[in-house]
Amino acid sequence: MTDNSPSLRSKAKALLSLHSWSGIILGMLLYAVIFTGTVAVVADEIGEWSNSNYHKDLLVASDVYATVSRLADQTPVEYLDEISVYENDRQQLVYFFHTHKQNPSGDMDEYGVQYLVNSQGQTISKETGFGSEIFAQDDTYALSRFLVSIHTELHIPSPWGLILTGILGLAMLIASVSGFMIHRHLFTDMFSIRKQRDGQPLKRDSHTVAGTWSIPFAILLAFTGSFFSFSTAFGLPAMGVVAFGGDQEALMYALVGEQQHKSEAPMTSANFTSMVRDAAARQSSVPSYLSISHMGTESASLLAFFMPNEGKVGYEQLVYDGTNGDFIEHKPLVGTVPSVSSEILSLIYPIHFGTFAGLMSKIVWISLGVAACYVTITGLQLYAHRNENKNQKTANAWRWFSRMCVWGFYGLPLCSLASAFGFFVSGNMGASQSLWTQYSFVIAAALISLVSLAMKNLKQLKILLLTGNGIFCLILPVLRFSSSHVGWLEALNYNMMDMLFIDFALLTCALWCFIALHKKCQQESQDSNVWTPTLSDVEVRK
Amino acid sequence: MNTTPILFLKNKRFWLSGPATLAVSLLFMLAMAAWFPPGIGNVNNIMMPLYMFPLIWAILFFYTYLTADLQKAQWILGALFIANTAILAFQFLG
Image 1 (tube, rainbow over the protein chains, first blue to last red):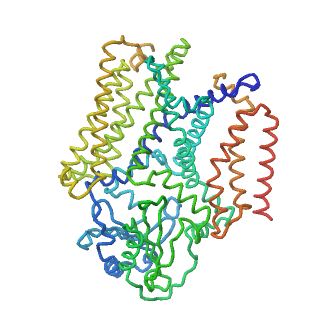
Image 2 (cartoon, each protein chain N blue to C red):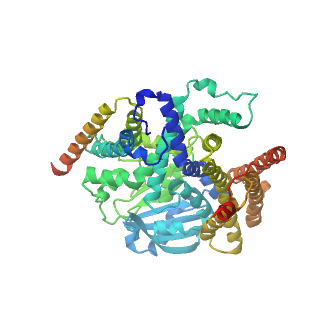
């Protein structure tokens, strides 16, 4: 962007420059966010898979009202403000009786008592604390939570992680819009891999084809992703300052669509179990979670939240009057009545998470995510390769850049697989899965970094990391089986499609790794070695 | 494109497309909370600016990056800055 005379350069050249630099400066982090985002699309399935679980639909099958009433008698009255109920990935119902107050970080949080109740209705654990803390220590979601957190915040403390991922979303927007604008032959570029090409020209063609297919997806995801990051990091509080003079509580009540001051006059609540079953019958589905507000007062209500059902795109929220059990309304996602904002929000969620057509839409989203990863990888590799050959003075720096690309592109999937390995091994050993999922990732990252610095031959480094990925993809289904003893026949019997999907996805990835490995080994035996710098070379020179 | 690390700091286009565009987009988003109709649900003035922030930023960014007339771009950003600051000042002080 240092050229002061734009009239002398074509706009296409400027866009190409913008496309390249936005990728080079933030490409590696962007790859991390896109890769983990692709994994996060199946976060729910990973949760089910990591616990070899299938949902027993306990919210409908069990007597929620009886359990809530029993637990309410043991719970301090201040926590009866709101009760969240959901079935976790270990066939238990989680009842969280809570109120709202500031946590030590200064954010509004839920605070109260969480009970775990098994499918027989017995309470198996009780914990008091802030909702964010209890959730962060819950081993049930250790693996899916860890992977999703890399995507949303790169494990950087709030709000900086969110701001960074928001900036990465904007960088992705720049790269995809500029990529779209520099295409003069958009439709022919979708199919323009030329047969006679190989090596770098083939890579360039593949970059263009994958990029062209994923442009609409990348623009949508970049747009919705930066909205999520910025609105959570500072957007909503800032809106509260302007629209409500800084009254964050009033802002939350406006968004949630509740009156700020409700009557707390005592009144017996109606049967919540009947309300839940009525909601399930209306939606022909089982709710994902329930929220019971102001139980035992004349303001009591029940909200049943549903994931997109067959033939529907958005989430559904059904509200019942808790005093007489009457159905009140289909509640919008924000505000009290349907509005443009709630319609847009109900579209943004399924678009970003790929939940609009069940597992099928998720598979499409994963495929496009893989294409976007490939575009990022090949884009950076092409730029590094071009500069290695163009300028002898900077060739060394660009070779280091190539090495960093290999480290990141092959290393991040390997670290993620290692975190799943840590999850299962720690579970089998009775250690904290929440901690060991993270530790395994860090240990793998440290080892991969050391190997990447020490190994002289870049092609051999690629082969090693690819082998590691293939082996882990092969091992994980076996580890899952050894920890739960749930096999594929049993999974088919209980219709555990999520678990089967992840098992087969991992085996497909293993197969892909070994095919790629075979090709690379063949190529390796044909090519002569290209020197690239290593840490030991730098030390020798010093 | 010159890749010397420090030279881009002397470039007017960098300051316009970078910090100035970001600042104006943020101000635009905040000021929208004051003038955008809240609607029956009373939430449009809160949510619409948040949805539109990436869009506003992208439009201003590509405009300032691609325009041949930097002077005009500077005036447009300046005008948006003043107008939105005035709206916010009126909201807080008026």
